[in-house]
Image (cartoon, rainbow, N blue to C red; front, side, top):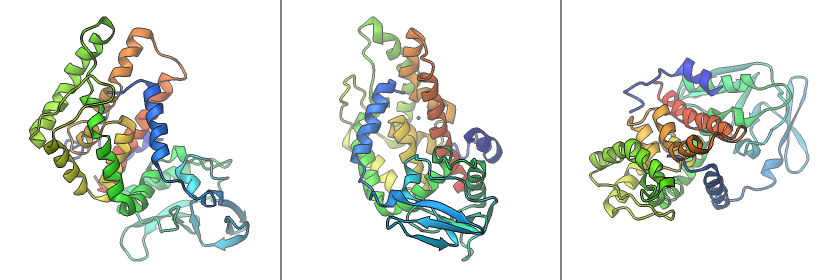
Length: 325
């Protein structure tokens, strides 16, 4: 789905817009779990919304167990977690201009789509609205699967989470900055890691040189799993850059950094230094080196690669469509 949207909606390798070294799968899973533990717990009652339909009406069942009619569709909080929300309750998906003329909305039959917190899903551009409408049109009758709708998830993040928690998002990104994967260098003093070290020098050093040229501070590389410490000047410059981003840009950077475990790769993509395939090569550099040596595990490495492509590509597609590029 993400690949079809890319082909239809975004010009590949656009130098004006495309203006993320992967660790092993176990480390990625460990960091994902750790990040999840830091997220504030959502109210369990909010995740209990379900849908039912009767003729031309749709009913939303809330925590109280009562059903009420609605002329709009509010997605439950479970939409943001990847759970199956319920059966497809609509036939047609369309886009239209927002009532106030400022932005575009998605219509499921005659119902206006809303975000999990019941705010209208008002999108900045028509191309982005059409791409999200395509995600809804793609859903099967037996269930709505949010994991096939990355643009919808990113839109909800940009419209809801970023405006309310911008400072916290930036704080969390900067908290992990010193442990950025592009700063971590495999030891070159033994046979098992020297090959990885040489590939890192070849592939990552150009990105580090770009960071020095672009921001005026030379990044510090290290071999410790626990990270090192970057110059205060570089930390300040990166933090100020994040503070100047708009909501869609910050949502994109946050999404890429979460998948790549690298804020530098995320910024490099948004600023046009890295194309999608170049970023994926860097994100997976360490793991691909292990695959070259020990072989690929079917149902493991291949699934991980596919998921990474969706997460990275959809974030860049989202940002491009939000700017009508």
